[in-house]
Length: 385
Ligand SMILES: NC(=O)c1ccc[n+]([C@@H]2O[C@H](COP(=O)([O-])OP(=O)(O)OC[C@H]3O[C@@H](n4cnc5c(N)ncnc54)[C@H](O)[C@@H]3O)[C@@H](O)[C@H]2O)c1
Image 1: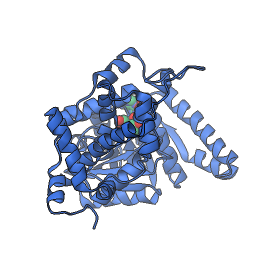
Image 2: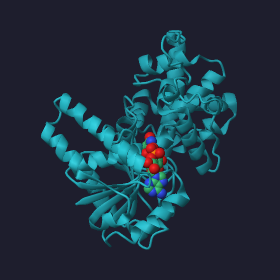
Image 3: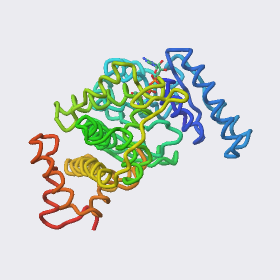
Image 4: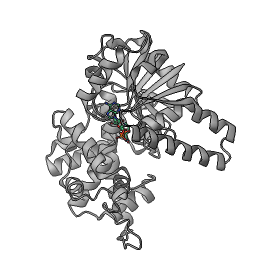
């Protein structure tokens, strides 16, 4: 099957590589010639590194590279069975692309968007055949991150959903099916990892280095929240938070912080600008953590119960199954354990008590516990039996 990819930026070029490595002839489209050239140069480099590391033979690498064809018109997509759009995150522009695209593809071609935050239903609504539109959300970098969220719109038929899921499964990705709601699974459930860390910093409970140390050394997370925000980019991370918050009708649980907003405004975007919460210039002195075990455990507990609350609420609202929510967080953002499994281990009553204590202290909606946690605690049930 031929695969089309629209947008040759960070995500599109990675998705094209994944499809080509899975044996497909790929058509990579971009309105900007420079983006196509950059994607091509970057693919050459990635393939050369894979050859160097002995993960691929020179011949195989050449075949993968040759499978990716650049194009600047949608007619090249006429034989594609799937086209994935990965252009700028703007609903109006995406809709225009889908309208134009539909005129050039076959009747059976599935049309997908890699959007992180826009509604798949609204993109589908711009098409004559909305039933063939689905969200296929890869994580960055697409060739390395195993998770892909598959998002049916209300219009998507089961057959088209299954076809899309089966295809991405055949690319050796871990797929989870999620409801078409803001942030899908990962970008919704992960919000407190950043938000609650910033909140504790703002309140002076601990500095950034200490929070990062606690989350890594005690919590077992691969990166601390501030390190991770610097890695993702404070502009991108702030925008995702603001988008999720706005899309949830300003639910205080997702409220963005002034701390991160100011970092963004100052241009302290993180690693990419050499300065974020930390200083990445050569020889820079960054603060050392205060390795106080008691403080560290309190930090981890507060962030963990907020994350568990999000995971429980996503399950309560049928965003995805318990297994898929746990899989999404372990495979999409490398959490050391699934959050619902973690809740079972820590005791759901303990998690609920922790949240209620915060709620009592702050009287803020931000700390309201999911009713599912309350029900599970009342009936002494677990998420997994
Ligand atoms: N970067 C991430 O971490 C990430 C992760 C998951 C999903 N996404 C989503 O993937 C999409 C792409 O993000 P990205 O980070 O790759 O962006 P990017 O800016 O790196 O690349 C976007 C590309 O699209 C091209 N483009 C813009 N308008 C176009 C049009 N009308 N037709 C064809 N090409 C056009 C641009 O020239 C650019 O090359 C967005 O919807 C984003 O939300 C991003």
